[in-house]
Image (cartoon, rainbow, N blue to C red; front, side):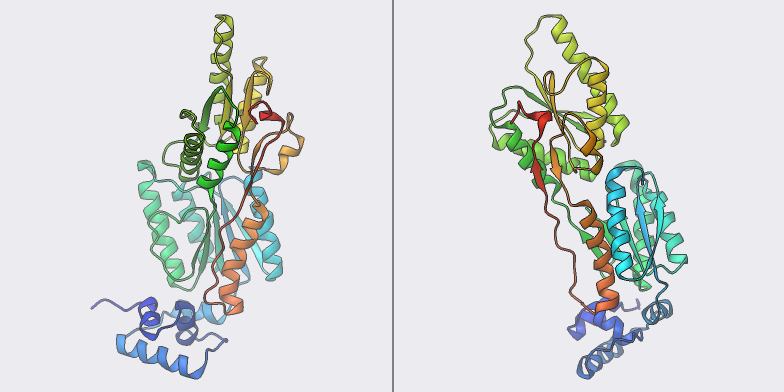
Length: 358
């Protein structure tokens, strides 16, 4: 007979898994006597056996928060990390950092390392992948996270849930409306724009990139515009630069042939890709927005120094880090059983780089 889970006990008792955990795993914060009795009766009827590691985590705190990002040198992740650090200070905790390059196998190793150091919670930021080559890594990462949560750990993931993760207890997702916001950007750019659109995107199967591509195409359709061509490349500045060189060659070839080709409006699915594409266009003697318009997504801090000012979608990146960290801390410290992160909002911000598309 399979062992009963804490979730089943909570469901039978009519309480949250967090409340059931506090009753059965010995937390210092005690629910009311009638609730505690109901939980114990449910546990007895199901034959639930408390996990010893979970009991230890319920009674103590290591004061550590693990943060997993793809690349801390990327301004997107740096801003989220600042938010995590700020929220950690509020909780009087220290942050352990792991950078993984975006591979789920490397993320699994980071989770295992943080679990071994008894980190109270783990925040994971970075696009999820459903590509075939990441299937094994996803399965290993999901299993490691499920094990960590079953043993009392708390996890917050930015964007999409980890592919294959089944944990119901201690698992939070900070939702970012990438598809909706990309659609809004497309609709605003398409107003009065007679030229063509090109999307510079990450590899197919990278969920954040795919959401933004899908949303942008939907926005163009709503505006009565033809669908954009999609160029797939790596999800970083280098990928944007490579795509920019391809587009620069296309623009220059049309000019040399005297062809009156429609001017391009380029949407790069993140700001660092947009910066790379713009650099490539400039390296080929092209100017923005005279020869091509360009927009990004995220509104990273380094855009303050980018010229011409880049149109983008502004995300509250530091707030995302704070919200993810506080979501896990609420469960442990404040007794808020129903605490779950609210969806993040964003804002389309049109600037000089697309002024002819506005």
